Amino acid sequence: MANSAIPITVAYGDGIGPEIMEAVLGILDAAQVPLRYEVVEVGQKLYDQGHTAGIAPESWDVIRRNPAFLKAPITTQLGAGGKSFNVTVRKALNLFANVRPCKSYAPFVASAHPGMNLVIIRENEEDLYAGIEHQQTREVTQVLKLITRPGTERIVRYAFEYARAYGRRKVTCMTKDNIMKLTDGLFHRTFERIAAEYPDIQAEHMIIDIGTARLAAQPERFDVIVTLNLYGDILSDVAAQIAGSIGLAGSANVGPRVSMFEAVHGSAPDIAGKGVANPSGLLVAATQMLVHLGLADSAERIKNAWLCTLEDGIHTADIYRPELSNQLVGTAAFARAVIERLGCTPRQLQPVHYQATGIHATIGEMPKPAKALVGMDVFLDWDHDGRDPNVLGAALTRHAPAGWQLKMITNRGVKVYPDGLPETFCTDHWRCRFVAVQEPITYAESLALLNALHAAGFEIIKTENLYTFDGERGYSLGQGE
Image (cartoon, rainbow, N blue to C red; front, top):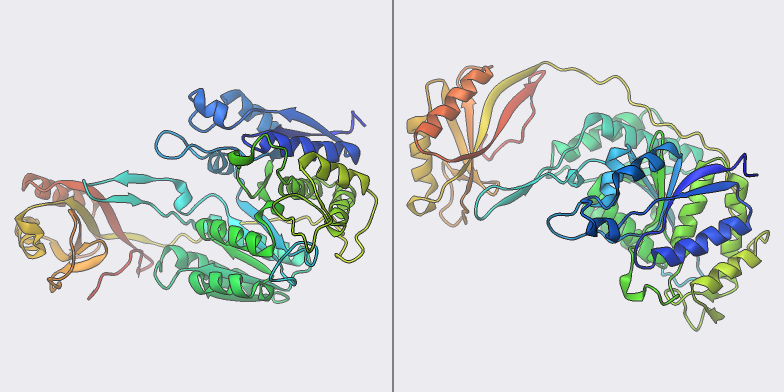
């Protein structure tokens, strides 16, 4: 078996990570799964050594040469100085799809939603998780939300292919495109276009706030949910918790060459070393990994043994309920109980059956519309004359060169000039929209505008060019435009 063993990368992580990883690998070994482990160290120790992403450079080679990476939870540094290891790996290795099944195991694990059985497919690389942030004035910070057409098309197509491969009947898209009409709007429009290619699968769209509320109240109405990065992160934890316990949820991060598998929960340092952690989330992730590697038989054997363990009421503290459970066990004892049930099939819970799915997510040819520069949003740090937008507007109009018109000024997205309301609270951060009298313009003409404003003493902190694409605006409108 050694010669045919599939090499995978393993990281024991922080907090409860080493305990649950030892338990999971023990189950894999007892099931005689043909795997060979290459261990890398990531997490807190590496952060402490000065590696800002929590990983040493040499570990990248190990992760990249193996098809799967089984990772226990790690502790991510908070605040300035440290990067999220998960976000770094997802983006560096093109792990574009996060797949989180969320299923109820009632009546053996307490759940208010015994019929819940859904999958959340989350875009994994873009959105606010690009992590591009700036402090621009003394009072204002910003973060950039980046949504791309290829990234959106790939994750949406993956969701429909996943639904088709696993016999799912419906895909629900969730966005906030009633507010973010360009970024979330791109995601929604792409979803509608691709959904038309899958007439055998029902497609629907919901605004994320009402969608989240419905998920929490009626998860049985959902089958597959596809959404943007931040929304998917929140939805996944909500769904995992209402299914019974976040400790039972595993997660796959799928890429074209390497895929990473992990528990949804964190490193739980408060219970680390006590031997009480539930290894189920990481074990479920490991079964996802086995299916991905073509070891469906091994995944079935282990997952069914795990279901039998839940049925027999052998539970760790996070899911133990006196009225439902028969035995309170720790991490190692739970793993032994799963091993003892290898080869068994659950009696009441539905047994699992896996098959090779061959899920592929292609990107079609991207359109190349004609692009024209028609204006510029100039952001200023301005804290003079009582922050009166009328004073600022008059000064900008006076100093703008010929060919430019000041269209409006906003503060925190609210129009304050012209015709603003005196009650509007203003910070020291101003967006000043200039449009060309005659379109299109050259970039040299936009530089002339900036030079004129700089010469007049204005502090320019940022600019955004305003473009049209095939004549359609590529920027959000302000009030009154």
